[in-house]
Length: 105
Image (cartoon, rainbow, N blue to C red; front, top):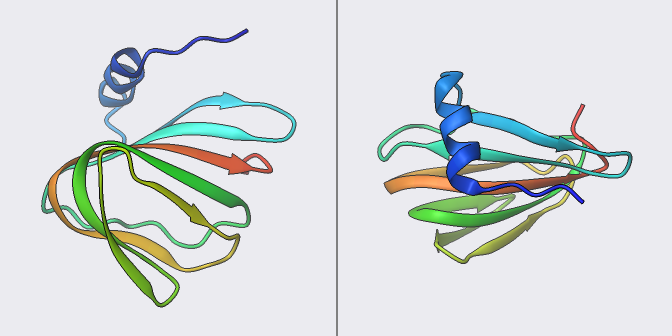
């Protein structure tokens, strides 16, 4: 078993001055913590893997393909591989648990 605490992961991510911290990588999946401050732009581009976002805290809009929705704590979003997507209109600091399958390269 591997056990992670979000507060510890967020502190490690911040200590490395990055928006993303990959904290798990296994044969069939990987997981990370993604953080964007309110008002910041999301620079990501489409990935080769399917992914799931679980919003841990914050509030923003997300556009996946042609669909846009508002997300907040507790929202879960599935993004198919190679689909353009990004968070925007981030009104509260955003913390998102990200799961990739297969693992992110």
